Every structure is written in C-alpha cells, then in structure tokens.
Amino acid sequence: MSKRRDELRRKDELRRKVARGQARARGEPVEATGPSPNPASNLIMANAIVRFGSILLRKAVDKRMLRNRYGKETADAAVENQGLGSTLTAFVLSKVAARSSTGAIMVGSGMLAKTLYDRRQAGKARAKGDAQILEDAAKD
Image 1 (cartoon, one colour):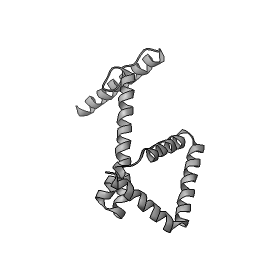
Image 2 (cartoon, helix red, strand yellow; image 1 turned 30 degrees about the horizontal axis):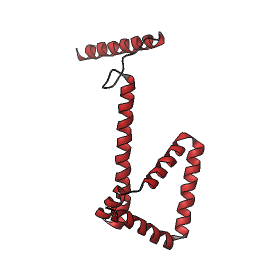
Image 3 (cartoon, helix red, strand yellow; image 1 turned 90 degrees about the horizontal axis):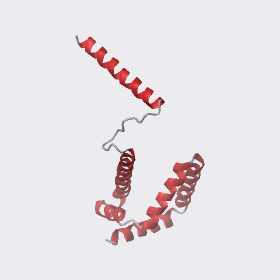
Image 4 (cartoon, helix red, strand yellow; image 1 turned 60 degrees about the vertical axis):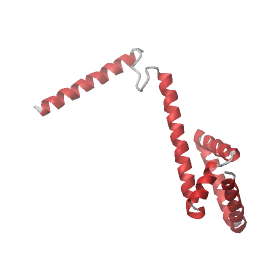
C-alpha cells in the first residue's frame, strides 16, 4: 500500500512539474514563490534578508578576529565603532571583487601585497594597528 501511495505521489508531482514547464513555455505567468504574491516584493525582501545576514556575519568574524588579542569588550567596541571610511572601503572592494574574475584577482593581489608589506614592517604596523583599534574602541 505504501509503495502504491509513493508512486502516485511521484506521478502527481511529475504532472505538476510538467504543467508548470508547459505554462512557462507558453509564456503564461507562473505562481510566485515567497511570502508575497508580488515577485518584486519577494526580491526586495530576499535582498534585505541576505544583506542583514551578511552584516551580522561580518561583525561576528571581525569580533572573533580581534577578541584573542584585545579582549572581548575592546573587540566589541572596536567593531561597533568602525569608521565610515573603512566600511565603505570594504564595500567597494567586495563589489569590485564580485563583479569579475579580473576584479577578484586585483583585490586579492592588493590584499596579498598589503599583508606582505605589513609583515615586512611588522613592528611599525603592529603599533599602528594597535593604536587604531584602541582609538576606535575608545570612541564609545
């Protein structure tokens, strides 16, 4: 009995998929998926959710990277008080890297060059970076 029910369910699902494909081929509008019947609203909602999620993930990663060196409170304060300039720089770099493979190579090469330069100038870079982080944390 269970096999028969599964078989009927699969056939019904296949019929629905074929009907949707035929409707799409004829140019008929297909039922929108999402919370709203308006596809544009669904796209805006999805975009907002993805952006919100990426902001939360970025802040969590930033805090985690700073926490071992500066402690929880200082790391949290530094991430929350991050300046507009560094936020815009990160945004622009991510946009350039995401648009093309050439952009990704350019951004990646720039990051590699910056890392190698900082390692070469380790003492000065560490002192400068510490001063900047502590300054950002003290803004609160």
